[in-house]
Amino acid sequence: MSDARTSRPRHFQAVAASLLLVTVAGGLSACREEKRPAPPYPAVEWQGTPPSAPIEADPWVIAARKSLEAQAVAQNITDFTLPELVETTALDLRVRLSRHPVNDVTQKRRPDIRPGPDPFLPMEVKPGPAAGTAEVRGCVVRWASETGDVPDEMSASGVMFRMEHLEAGQLRISSVVTLPDLDCSTATPPIALFVPAPEPSDVTDVQDVVRAKPAEIDPEYVDPE
Image (cartoon, rainbow, N blue to C red):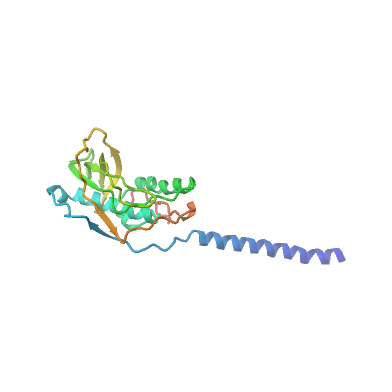
């Protein structure tokens, strides 16, 4: 009888301890899923005269520039659910972009940041292979680095942005194709910088990278209800 009486409190203590561990673990998990507070969306200031060529008025070019801007901001704050990014950049590309800081942190490096949108000089806009698509070709400078400094020398390379037009009206970059045969040797893409300038990343844990996920405007989105 005495054994039975002493074993029951021990049993209750074990159950209570298990519940406490589950509660604590659940609380930590819930906290872990919370996003870090995002800084205000930065302003963009052109260095010198803003681009004014006739092609700049093309809606597809305007959309491509907005996407480049949002991509840079998302990378700088390692949040790839940023509304501006979702509005301007397709899901597959957002997923690919979110892998870069994850790889950096995994390899014990600070995630790269950009001092502004990647400088881009549009050269041609063509209809895409399907209705509601387009191709924007031009020269781009990729200038991401750990410090986010503007490089002393910049080299542009050929690129094609495949664009899509969603039913709700958004124009987005859906994918990026390199164009090694496009001559960008003399191209001088216009430069814009973020204000305030971004700080070097302090992200050291892959859990702090907010990865891309389907949003309601994405064709891939499935309503959980």
